[in-house]
Length: 270
Image (cartoon, rainbow, N blue to C red; front, side, top):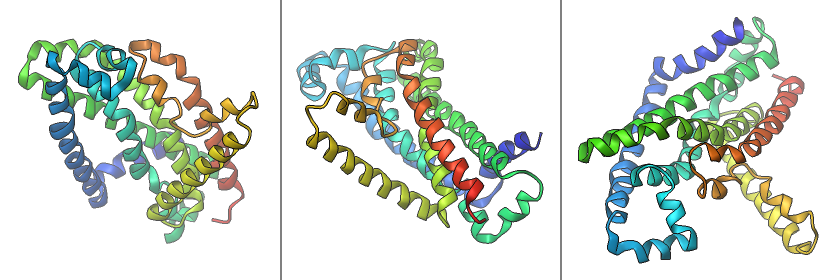
């Protein structure tokens, strides 16, 4: 029951504090700009038949597959944009799971009432509940935008809601797990975000070096799947529930990152 209460508190904290509402307002403002100036104009532009050649130029030989693999063009554009934009929101929102409490000293007070690992995993679960709301709100906003121009097209988006929301939730899992790990190591949310950027760049450079150094080795291809989000390019070519073919990749990333985070949470002096 304590774990459930902690997870619920993570959600309520977002809506019950001034900082939480500022974060919500900032997210809505940025997503509104993306919706109004990227998704909606792109959907209108790409719906014109004479732009077919440009679509092929932008997206390559798989252009038709990327743009037309969902029920409507709006869903396809939303899917394309969300796969790359929402992970950044996830990193920003989930950055302060432990860091601030540890700096203020309130983490020790919380640990008097629950175990370290219970607190760690419960806060991760709470952040994943927030991610569900994040994805649902963005998809519903895309539906509302489409309904302004065509109610029929908006209704065609309904069957795509569940596979898209579930798959985007899976995509965001390793990013939240990464911030769970880094929030244990950092002293503030800002520092955790900086750590994530540094870690991403350093690991990417190391992987590129290894791949270039041992490019003929049979095992080098496995390194393409090391970083979270490695499956995103493959997801662009899939639609509906066939997207679950790549689900094991974010699940493995999440498990590894959570195990590392749990280890540091258990051993670190809090």
